[in-house]
Image (cartoon, rainbow, N blue to C red; front, top):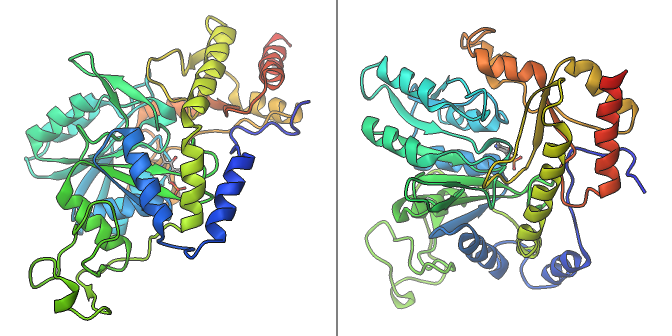
Length: 401
Ligand SMILES: *Cc1c(COP(=O)(O)O)cnc(C)c1O
């Protein structure tokens, strides 16, 4: 049986997931109940960081990060053009200026040398932060980025939406898992259905920085605190006039709005789904790597392949990408044959919104060349062997015509 059509990515919902959500729906809490804290705790354990803050989606996670880092009007932040536009937009939400730097044509990730060039060509203090993206599931070497960031006094937000479970190997031969907070100040994840863990909508921020964690907790819910955080990290937020107070000193209804925040909360039944999905995330990763291995074998050395995701240690394979000649016609041929491949991404700097700031063709040669040739093949844990064989055969047929 072959799905009609075969999508590039899709969620996997089991009976166990449905039971978990149903239980949550029948409980006393639909939002901000015990399942949020449980999801945060299990996610933090999985990622290997101290703190995790669940939010309504990955874009909200990015916005809370730029708020917590106090991005102000006109401040410059560097990111890659080959990502979902949300990676850049979070800077604009705070009035900051997005400065794109080109990708490395081999890894498709933000190129540290192009970032270095930007930093070296301006007075120190010009740039405030960097947002590298673990694009397609390939982990950015954040040890290198941290060194550079420290030299220039920059913060780092790691956009790890594509890479839960992904890692790079640092200079001490240690695996550094995406979002573990050892190098980036903050990291974010998305639980949109095409990502590794599905909550419907959902997101998470991870960090090892307690001060940032406290800010995120406030900003997530209107900037309001009741002082008695129901979260595993007790007394994490203080009242404005100092210290956490016993109930005897404050009436039960007392709360303070200390900052201008938003309602970026996740619901309890989404958290139930997330926790249930998290149990299978490593299984999914094994399957993704197996699918990647088969694509690697099928396409490496073929004359029509200009580049491919490849066999990379620590790659989490949210996407499996080929760079090919004659991409548009291959895309059309695949669709005719039931394979709904996708293109990730149109470079952000060429979006009409970003062109108004002066960005244009030719600014990011490697990103633009990558975009001319890239195509993302079906990649999700429930893709069957038969379906993958059909994808490979269809591509081979196209190029043997
Ligand atoms: C999906 C995604 C986001 C945004 O996440 P949402 O949950 O859809 O808001 C941000 N960055 C990257 C790289 C993504 O893939």
